[in-house]
Image (cartoon, rainbow, N blue to C red; front, side):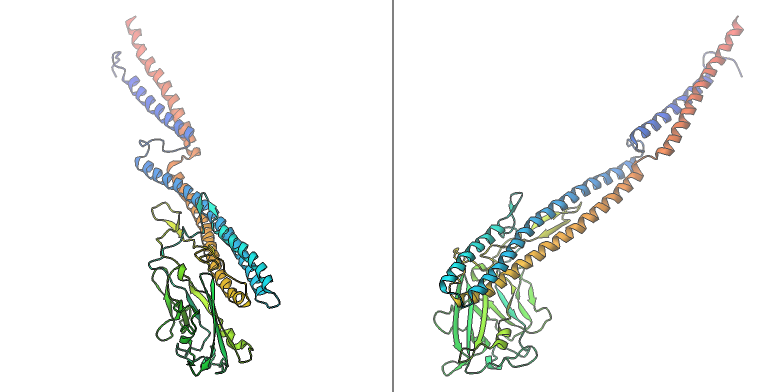
Length: 445
């Protein structure tokens, strides 16, 4: 090999190798100092893209979990208010049972009325409970109710399935086909509450003027003060069909057995009917308990609601649009529960008859509130499961992102050590290459 001094190829090759080793060592130092295998797109362009999408997913899941926790807090506030209303209605029923007892005077009932009014006002206060400035239970966050609104539907499935709207009261039978023991000499007393006003009237089961009364005749308007047109037996043959719900869907009895259904004539809270009571007594005023147990078994299946757009509360719990939980919080104010008229007047319990009718009003109101409590509790339970699922998803996504983005510190330390040794070896060899060139000087001496 010729001895030259202008171009030192050995030195140039060694410098090139030294630079490579130096860059490799610097890259290892960067990974070790940051803890990440990918520090720029140049390290792994596709891996960086995947990793960034996963990081976006992780941050979104963190916010989802925060949303879930906040939503759960909101539901707990609503649940607390509903629970308080349940306690109040329990107390109200106790007071009404007391007021319906004739050991009390009208003055005693007036005292109970004052207690009643105060507790009803507290129900309205409960409904106006707020979370972050939002009033929760005043009906402003209810689900959609299509026009013209829903009608009160009171259903009784205790009659024999052969019962029709034209069946005379004397021929009524219970679920098992046993006669209710109603005689032509008996009297039927019917009462219901609308707009806080109690309507009550007593008819003979059979008379020369009206003949034998049938179920369809009970609300036929006997007497001028009975509120004709407020409530009616659904037309057509008695069947399992009850009515339509807030979304216009058909509602049927749970087991599809035929049922007697009384329906309010008008939709909405203004036409709401509460506290339907039908009682049979004989000519001497003795109560027919067997018949009354069946006749008094009407329950509200469809509640009266005014038409409204969908104002449900939306809890965003997913990383994509529309991945949310919706809950409609029904109106829990006393007017919607049938305890107060739309003009603000309270349910009157000043007489024994009114107090007796009011017992079923409170019973119906309690069912509305318990339904809302169940709905809120179901959402709380779901949010708990949702939070657990989000945390698990976040952990798994974080683990996947770590595999792509994070560096293996042990392996990278070994790589750094190797590059460090190679760098030092290159430096030594560069010195040696430069020393070889200086040997030419000995020829010039």
